[in-house]
Length: 131
Figure 1: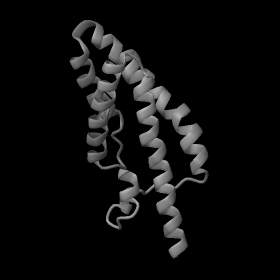
Figure 2: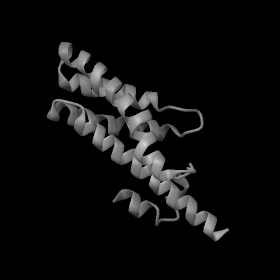
Figure 3: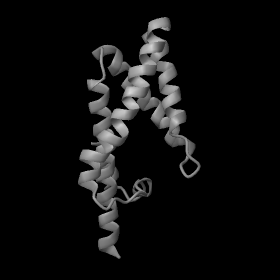
């Protein structure tokens, strides 16, 4: 729902700065296989499991969320993107703890990233139509 509101708000459209040649393919194939599965296995699978074994799920969630946020730091992106991603990492970590596996975090991560791609494509298409 957040993306649906954001694509309609002119002030929020600046956050959708990436364009995609094949948004449906990107959202349904590239995002889950090249991003979501890799990140979830690394952060909520291996790393979360190792930390949980020695320190428990609270530490596992906190540490992996912080590292997940830092993983998303990039010179061309504002630091707030990494902060938001760390918060998302907490949510994904809680899902990992409550669900006992990776299915819930993978599905939520895929939904967030995939819908973001489709929202960016929608904003890009509306910019092109106005030009």
